[in-house]
Image 1 (spheres, rainbow, N blue to C red):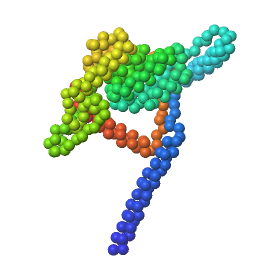
Image 2: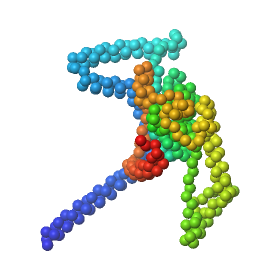
Image 3: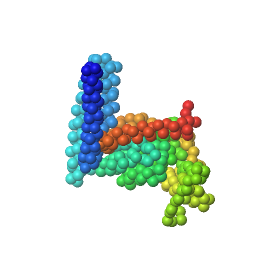
Image 4: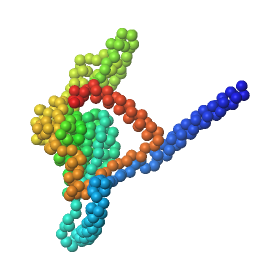
Length: 360
């Protein structure tokens, strides 16, 4: 019996220790989260893509090429880098003289800034995109280029309207804007993509879906069956056109359709403004097209993957990948992880239900 109580006491002590540890973690997380609210929320990270490609080439070369040849290559590269540094120094001195008004221009490598936008239904990524664009425009000038790798199946009209406006800032500053679509730019995603000076897509990317959709379940008959009253009080004739729980009227339904049609008209006008070469009535039908078909419809300008385009840019330009890293507290990270898991499940079911016909 004494042994039983000893084991039970040991088990209880372990359980209490675990509970206390969990509570301590929660308390610390809340404290860190509250401090994070008053601290700096994030920072810009910049990576030179040219250096990344050089590092990959060197790693592969060190394995594939024989040792003596590799040593010669390394020696040659060091000599080239030394020569490039001297040339760069010369250019900087020349540029300094230009600023002083002493001579004409000097040759400087054009710069390409690469940004990413991975859109959800709320275009949440715009919170980082706006900061990345602000950072880039503080430095970029004429002759430079901004490349946005865009992936989005669309979402809320006002959210993607804001995202499109952020991209327009690039063009308004006289900087060339290129948008690359590797998988999908549909609906709100295409609203963003169409503002580009140059719109590129992978051969099987999904493009288009220029339309508006709204879905609303109505539980009025179910409530009526179970003798449940629902009251809706509004001020303003069209404050609520359709409702989920009340009895919808033809007048309300007509107004809702009118609003949807007006949004579609605004969408078409926006696309036409930025891609006047389109036959808008042919493509604004809510359909999608894959790469080559989208090119035939002039929805895109060329077929090429973002990787190939950026690799080519590295041959003649200094290419920089710019990311805004949002600093999040531990509770926020946990919430985001749970939210992402739920979103992932819902999106998988949505894809199975609406896009299964496109799978090979």
